[in-house]
Every structure is written in structure tokens, then in C-alpha cells.
Length: 92
Image 1 (cartoon, rainbow, N blue to C red):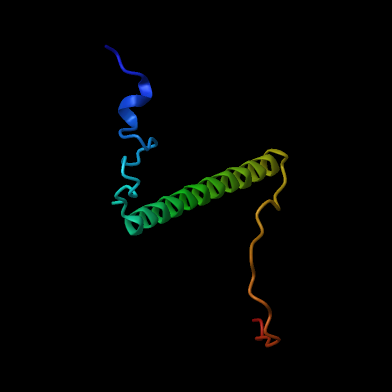
Image 2: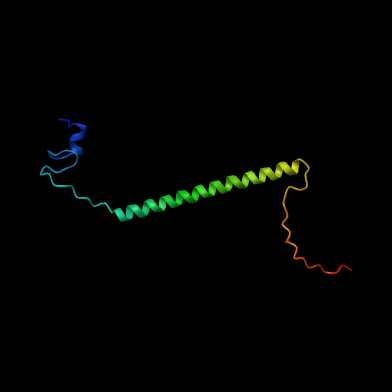
């Protein structure tokens, strides 16, 4: 005789995994390890998201520079110069 699908999953008269005497099921879940694993997964996903954002920005910057150079411009890259100190040395 075949049993219904739910008969094997829910033993006892209580159904839904509860024992027939009404006692609570044993909970052996390690919540500390579960929280730690979830935290590691979140950190990993944030690192991946940061790497994707950095890569997309780098590609956009390179494309912007390439478009500028292809247009024949020479001022595509800003060159930082130190601020003048106000002291001038004699020129020979």
C-alpha cells in the first residue's frame, strides 16, 4: 500500500514534525555558526560588488580618455603641479 506524500514527512498525530505527545521538537541548530556564515557571505558579496563597481568605473575612465585622445586633444590628462610657494629663485 502506498502512503501519501505527507505521511512520511510528518510522523505522529501532531503533524508538522511535532511528536504525538505535544513536546517541542529538538532544535539543534547552531545559530552562532549560522550568523557567522551569513556575515561572511554578506562581506563576500559586498567585496564582489565593490570590485564590479571599481571595474566599471575604470573602464568608463579609460573609454573617456580614449575618446579624448581620438579627438586629437592634448589636454586629456590633468597633470598635478605643486603649488607655488612664493619663493622665487634667480634664473641664470
